[in-house]
Image (cartoon, rainbow, N blue to C red):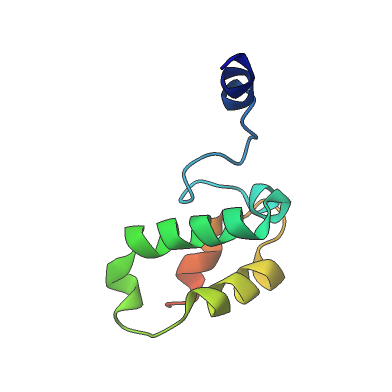
Length: 82
């Protein structure tokens, strides 16, 4: 039990809302974490996705290539629907 509590209190900085997550935090995640962040973005922005079809894997590939510097995931994600 103490181990579980210790692990929960030492969550990485990227354990945050995907809408405000920095690209550097996204890059530091493992694949499962990145896909969870993408799912959160898709859920939060379902209205944007209705105009264009883009799969989670395509989003993952684009974020991996485009999400750099001081940008947030949401900044980059929204650019795919402009």
